[in-house]
Length: 134
Image 1 (cartoon, rainbow, N blue to C red):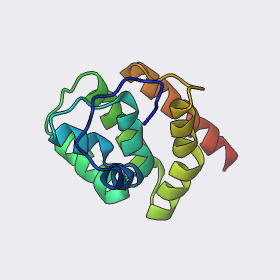
Image 2: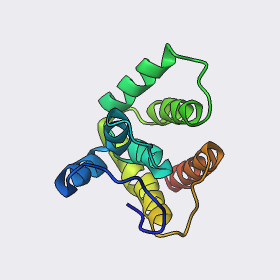
Image 3: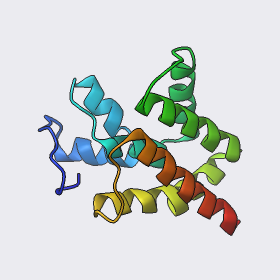
Image 4: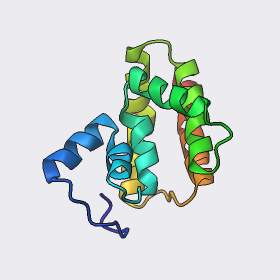
């Protein structure tokens, strides 16, 4: 977690938190505990989830439209990410080269993620730069 931002105290162990970070499950784990999700948790979901997990989130939220705020942005980004990657390997490459570096920039304060619009702009910019390198 970013030490520069206030976070609610979690009853997750360090190991559970590390596993959740790597699997893209921080957002879900905190929400299941009734805790406020940090803004970077939405990016964590995009940056680390496999295709099956992203599809499940997309499918779950597709029936709940119209969403608002974070939900709408995350749903739209998931749809675009899945449409732009046809295999698990392509998804992993996109995450490794575009989304994980963005996540690290947010954690160390080089980028700010305070609103759903910030998430949309930052992720789409990272995806655009990545796609331009292909």
